[in-house]
Length: 233
Image (cartoon, rainbow, N blue to C red; front, side):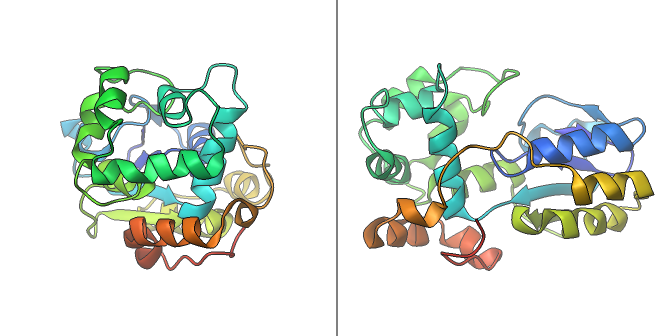
């Protein structure tokens, strides 16, 4: 979470937030970090009236990025370790386990118990109590995380698409009254992506069944932001 005088930016996991965080901290005077990957309900009271900004991405792409990033780490997070059985499961099996959490999967209690009991300063920063309400929601993990981070959307929140970040971010900032300097605009247009996971095109990871499963579980995001399978990289 980054707080500035005119807005608060919420960092949805693996959705371009690291790039936006650096941009804001570098070019918006007085901006500061307030916690790490914290959700909207954790915004300090004195900032609660400010507009909220966020970035979302194509759910099919998100899951590939999440899996690839964790699989390449020496110490993957507990979410990946449990759902992939410490890396023994491939992408398809791991994603099926992840998507099943919204239906109250057998390993959900194990996962909740294994996750931290309080907010910290690293990783996805999702304590067990924050994941517990996914049970019975029917949501895919990314849609649940989106709802958990942003809460009920209204006129005080603007969420751009990661795939259009370079075009939409200046507009989002200016809509809050935040000036976008020439240097800031140049950074947005030309700086390389940050914290990128290495993987093939995301469409190569899906069979028809798994593709349809994401379409059902993550329908709220897909419909809200007009995503389609096969678009974007």
